[in-house]
Image 1 (tube, rainbow, N blue to C red):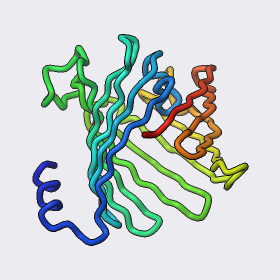
Image 2: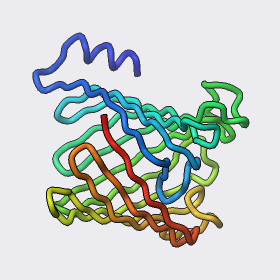
Image 3: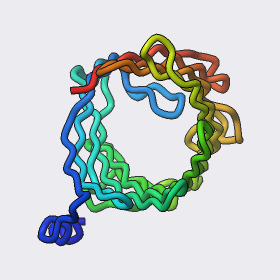
Image 4: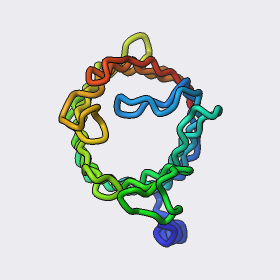
Length: 205
């Protein structure tokens, strides 16, 4: 990862961009599951061109209830098709022998995801290939409803198995309506599998 980043920065294409930012959210909800009952700060940094991006994303709860996560990813795109490889890392996970533990009880999970967009419709499918004995699958559909009162509105629905559901069987685990307006964003998410719901609101900086 460091070699790729260094190589890219020594010969920066004309369309290259370096992004740096952070979100503040009232709680971290990921694929229909609550990752800590706490306000979280989620910083990110990325280097991208028209078809390639490499970056890091984190989530840090500001109280002891929050989940800490520190991820790396690389993404490639060609028109409406995209492929992303993510390394989800959970610092402090008690089953891990250290940062370089990529075993089944390690603090890392490696995921490969493919995505496709056609107009307002999008679909993504992901599989955990390392660090997850269940090789959990996740499939998500999204549909953009366009702009309402200067806010972008979309719908989403996700189905998973393994780590994403209460009994490991395939089940719809996240149905949401998503709104973004300026620097603010929010989602109302229902998880039919867990029979619960969440309201997540955040601001980007």
